[in-house]
Length: 296
Image 1 (cartoon, rainbow, N blue to C red):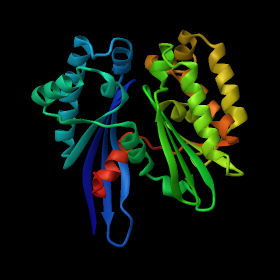
Image 2: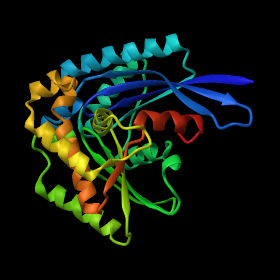
Image 3: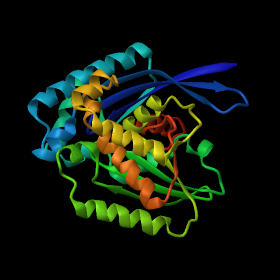
């Protein structure tokens, strides 16, 4: 007997908003399967507002309301039984965030929860990482967003430490990440990985997914430090327009991908990692799984 249930996750990030609708396939005696039914990405760059002027602009509030109305209709059409909507870094910092959340509830009937970096990291890390994490090895999990980057260290199958830093791609784009933040990240990574002989990176986020796709590698294979470094140099050699025209990148990806690559490269350098694995996971996947298993 096979039973299919539908769950949805809304991820309101600093660079874009996503709606993931997932089919959860239940079969007696087997682990549930999580299959993507639909993924809609809307390029509303809330971080540009939040990090530069401290509030979400009226224009972007209107765009958010329209997007949420559309998300609501899509969930209705798909017959979603439960959804959760989480907002991250940009909404954490916008001083009008509470009014925006109230307005979206009133106009689009979507309830949004603003979560902190620690909860964000925990939700992402609760996804399918156990398939990747070997119990006798050490991993640094790096999730790069528009407003912040979450680092989580795993060793022998256990979570050792995690930290969120205000170093995201939209902030970097606006020259808002000072040297002191880079120094803090370097110190945190070096201190936490010092006791381990070998560390492997696990990368999460839209930009590393794009880099991985461009490599043409199979899903289970890692990218090497040398490859990521050469891609960083290659992307830097192209203009913004060339990255869109020649590489087929979205306009809101073409300007931030270089900054994201720099974060992953630094994390590899400071932890001594020679490889980075890129599983297909993100906040929305984590939300669906955490909902299904009753964790949120």
